[in-house]
Image (tube, rainbow, N blue to C red; front, side):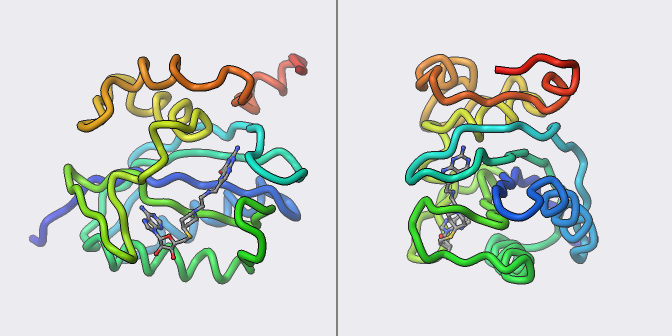
Length: 170
Ligand code: J1A
């Protein structure tokens, strides 16, 4: 038996058909070696940062994986590439973004990989889906997830798609 790690991964897309990209990404992550998705948030429509572009669909998943951090990163980058992600404009529109938020209680920061994800505590499009699947999470350097969410800008809407489907538009 090799060791299993717990990781939280953020997904985001706002080009072509974002919901299709996210659903495919979930299947592709599920198919990685020694990896299973143990929890998945619902999909949220969120306000993009940066230049004018469509709203972003975001979600967060919890995985159990035997992959080490760089192996997981490279596997996720391969999936992003297969979805044709182009990074021409920083914060520009994206077909698929996959970010490692947390990996066990690892803290690391080098040219390739920073864990915990360096900006996650400032972004409700990450924290609100994360809270759905990990309501009591305490982010070691930053504090309890509820406090982080209330500190962030409430103008940055993060709306569950289920809620919209009930006819609530904003
Ligand atoms: C590089 N990296 O980052 S792309 C990669 N730590 O080559 C990696 N923990 O080597 C490096 N996970 O969704 C370092 N990559 C990493 N991200 C880690 C993955 N507004 C890591 N509403 C550059 N919703 C890499 N997203 C990192 N506004 C950046 C893609 C993957 C995208 C930008 C809303 C969003 C963004 C801006 C948004 C959203 C980050 N998202």
